[in-house]
Length: 156
Length: 156
DNA sequence: GACCGGTTACTCGGATACGAGGTGTCCGAGTGTGTTCGG
DNA sequence: CCGAACACACTCGGACACCTCGTATCCGAGTAACCGGTC
Image (tube, rainbow over all chains, first blue to last red; front, side, top):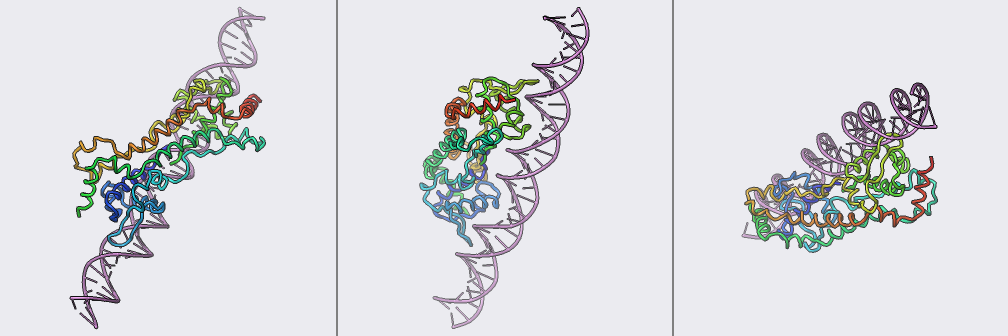
């Protein structure tokens, strides 16, 4: 199981946009900050726009900015926007295949125990992600980091 | 993010092997039970053998059996054996790239806050998986299911 | 009847193709800005 | 000097290739059981 690197990109970009208060930042600037392929990063930021986490303004001096205050954006929102809302584990109901064919349908009214256990674990993961916001990341980060990012972006 | 289907296969096979108490079951039989490609299922069972969850006995009347009692096999063990022990989220330290080049190395002694938050969520996921064993799955499963599996496997 | 050797059939195990999804790139549509011309 | 129209440059947005990883398959090495022959 492997999570796409776009999640890390999206979170770092959200953190940067949170520090640069409501100032539109184009993709090229964010890509240069982290040395990432600009076009591909843009593709990922579009996913965040579709999830209503960012807002995009076209034209000159345009770019991306946060759609909500940082305290209202959870890590779960960002992960779901980029990786997709589907669960990682998807029960294919293989218990009903092969030896299970022909058994009365009423036997399978209860959910597969494996599916239940897996969903329980993934729910714990989601709860932990939903309990943390971009604002929390800003609070735990060292104060000098925010200043360095603001200074680097203010330099023309 | 998507979890391989081999996890579901491995868990179902472990559950079946737990019900058929220490009776060696060949890959072909397990594949027929769930209507799965036999050779590919074998590949995944080999991963469970490497993780010392199953033991394999070659030759006629051979097959796979559990290496430990079901209460000593957690879901985390099975998932780690098949999906790999690495974390899903891997911090690439992009904060040190681009704008971060040239900053004193001492600034990055503290772990990346995003990495910390992600690891925390994944730790919750792992804890939940580690708290459940194959024996728990046996207990929560309806009693008729165990009988049906035993009957299907005893039929030659 | 018991023991031993050879044969057979069955099992796992790793090396080998195929395909989907993620990664990376490109070019066009749309918009705000800056300039320039006229009043 | 002020206003408006124009051209420009910059931005996002979706459509198009590449490449890694997961999926699927095959064949060979090894072993236990079985059968026949011998003592």
